[in-house]
Length: 237
Image 1: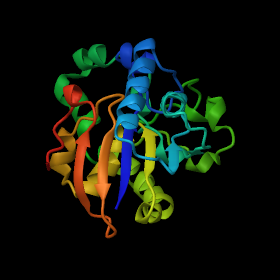
Image 2: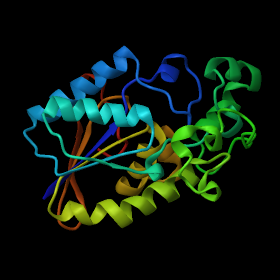
Image 3: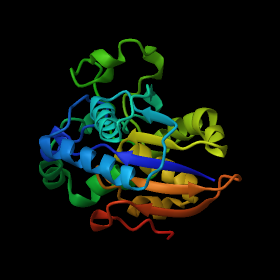
Image 4: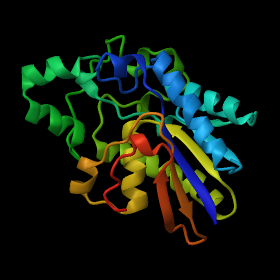
């Protein structure tokens, strides 16, 4: 038996501004830092020793994890992986969600945000918001940096990384992943075997640890959001 804990980063500055963020590297708000600290407290109360930590490359996920580790008084190094990054929103990146919804229509924006395999228009590579122009991605081969992504695209990279690097550890150790709304949605689709309709309805709250209890066959025997006041329907439990 082991535990897999999934944490969407605390509220970011662009969450607050209701902007499509994707691969843009923004930090946490003060509220987001408090959410991360509370996440750490909730994990500490479970008295579970975390053996291995993972984060995306993005600042909001890394800083969420650092705050959690500080709360747990745990100084282990963690692995950063671009494969756990948020979904790339293409040409929607940086736009205000409410203003864009008024312009394009709620149905179209919902389609972009929640559909399984529809990609927004690609982001111009000359844009300062494109990942090739953001410092943290300078070491990544340009051919793997996307111009836009669907949730299906995000699923492929997240699940491939999970199966190759994380899954085998869950036989005898506890793992915590600090990532993003869509990268965690993608992983939940895989872990809970959700269909395309179910995944379109799944919401992941910021800074609220989702704790999965796994058996030796990688089956989920129990799952719960640790902050019950801000829990979301997992659709399957």
